[in-house]
Every structure is written in structure tokens, then in C-alpha cells.
Length: 232
Image (cartoon, rainbow, N blue to C red; front, side):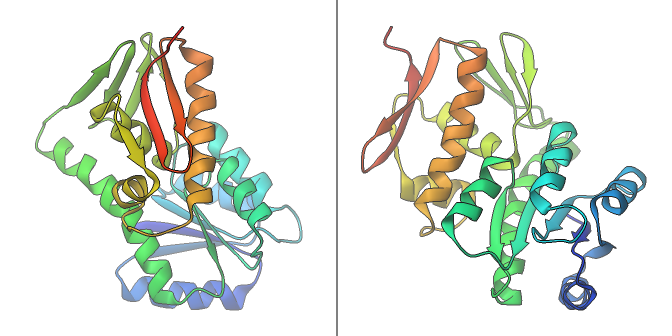
């Protein structure tokens, strides 16, 4: 379960507002105004999720996200005033699990957090029951309980969303998965931004292509994607 949330923002008023409604929902909140403070807190406290602003004085949220993603798959949600698609796509491209515009209501922010939380809880519950499930396809092995991915027995690092997308593909090989199906199964809602799906698929495809030539994610134009063996 997500207990400890780290908010990284250099606007104290916004952090206090976020802290108020997150604590009402039962979360424990930690705050940092820059990347260095965020890293110090992260190294001392078991942080389950990060809410990260982009436009900050000392260092951008994009830069901070890259540093965290280089060493951890902790869920990261950008919470920014930047609303254009270029910034959203860039944020998702560098490893964020979601992107929320600051004009969103507290209810929407909580809903997005809980959508990620539900995915994590499924894994934690199985671990507590000492059940260890694996999905294997060709040279890929996905351990659901430990949330680990191995290709040719070598572990690769995926974000939460990338992990869930690959898991969905692995249990539905050679089947066309529509944008709507992917949004429902991975994001937890039936309608959303197809751009986000395309960004995550592109990053996942890039990581897979670096590690194996046995499988491929195929684009089914206007519909979605199909995962299966390469045609070569």
C-alpha cells in the first residue's frame, strides 16, 4: 500500500494544500523544495510515490525525474502548471507514471494516485500470501510478485506503467489490444489520453528491442497494438 508520499515543489502554499488533502486520505506526506532535499529524504525514508513539480528555481522536475528513474522504479507523478502536450509527452518519456495538470481537483489527483496504488497492492497481497507467479513468453520472464522482468535471464528496469503494459501483453500474446483496453487495464479508466499510451509503448518497445529480437510490439494503426514473435 502507498503510505509515504514525497511532494517536490518550491511553492510552499501548494505543498501545504496537497499535504492537507493527502493526509485526510491517510497518507504520510514528506516535502522537499529541490532535488537535493528530495534525494536526502528518499535515502532516509521508504517513499512509495513522488508528486513532482516541473518548473522550479534550482532544478527542473524533468532533471529530478531522470535522476530518480536512473536508480529506482518508484512511481512518479508530475503535477505541473504546464498544460501543453509537448511537456506531457516529455514527462512520460523520461519515466513518469502519470502527468496531472495543477488545475485538477483534489478528487482527480487522489483518483490517479489510487489507480497506481491498486496496481502495487495486487503485487503486495500476493507477496504476503507467499504466492509467486511468473509469466513466461519466449525469452521473457516476468515475476509478478517481485515486479521483476528478465530477458535472456538479465533483469531490465521498467516503470510501473511499462511493467503493467508488458504484463498485459504477455497474458494476451498475438492479440490486438485496443487503446481503450490498455487504458482500462493499466490506467484503471476506460477513457483517457491515447498519446500517453503511445508514449509508454514507444519507451517499452525501445527497451525490449535493446534486449531481444525474438518478440516485437506491432502497431495496429487506428486501433492499438499486438505483441508477439518477430516476423523475421
